[in-house]
Length: 226
View 1: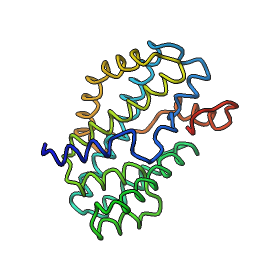
View 2: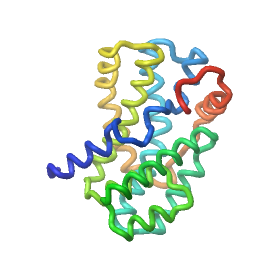
View 3: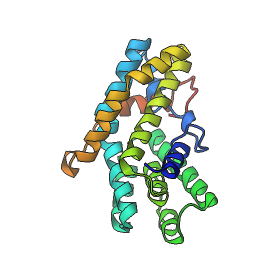
View 4: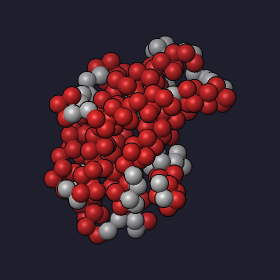
């Protein structure tokens, strides 16, 4: 990868990107509240199941297809996969999460001036911009290799999950970094799967996670927005 592309990737996969990712737990806080995650071993098991049974099965493959569609300037495919992703968010919090961060990233991309007028018009023309749609647009505009961008997206997701555990289980900082290091092989496997899974084999069926998300909407004490 060229140095410029690597630096672009580091910036747009950074937790410091001002889109609010740190304020979401994606159902993990509800699992903590319900006693399903109470220590490092259970936290790691939760993250692995979420990665392989949810993210790798749907979110990552959709992001992979969106990156390819943006690079081809295939506006029909961009609209189709973006609409499917938004429709797959089956709780109010999950839907609000991707729309809020997608909106924030769209605004950031526009203000930074990194996309051409045609791409920006299509991005802003989406009825509701999901986070993977905006991220894929930035990847295409900055000519970041798709495989590296997918790995970075998955790592950023895993890092955020680990940080939730560090704050809320709680885990020590070293324990959190040890856990993140141990997830690398699984992140690579999830990325490989997302690049090869067929459209017919993609799936967003995760009723347990959906129920936890719905419980989180009325949870009394919350640090996170999902």
